[in-house]
Length: 303
Image (tube, rainbow, N blue to C red; front, side):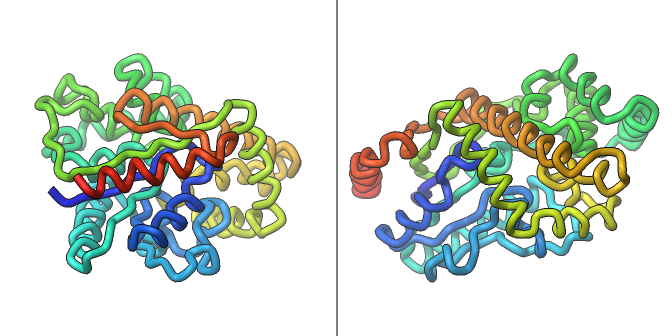
């Protein structure tokens, strides 16, 4: 099996800097495993790696969709595997980096994401429910039926919530739990980054403040004018819509971004701890341990 290095963890924990450092040392290329970084023009709110930060390392699956386009787990699964094949063929190491758990799992294992057939009737029922009761109540309905899926999907991502409900109603299985044990497709080494919860939350808050100075509000305004697009679902954008409508102050909107980002980080950690067997490292508070991590990766590469 092809070898693939994977770096996962919550937002603001240092995945990007580690991936670039390892790519330099291990002759690697990076595949973004983030569901929002595929969109052009969404650079600040998605914490997309800048051209300067890339340090000449090639990155795949960044800026590959326009804001008007949709992007699914199946799209990522197909294009991510193509990138792995391409990188491996050049004699380089594919390094998958991201915090979207379902994307990473779908890439590494061969399993179907729910039922293949479509059911317009079920989907329309839940669309109507959401229109009547709102996204929060729709998400709570998913939580009652399939708590595991609810923990991994943001309540404002109506499309994914409805898809999860649809799969559960049709199959009796969670969209995250295939009927058969999935087959591992790659010899992967999974690095999980974590740190103390209070430290992580401080880093998230600081990151949002920095994003504001970099132009996050302008990106959010861009999406506000295109509210029908899937791309508006990312945390860090919709929270500003009440501000644009005069319903909240800017400070209130910023605080909502921070709160939702912290909650998302918690969900990310829960996902990876429960769903995938990672080797966990705290490089924020114990940066010297990177030497041990690098040796572990070298040992894996040699086996």
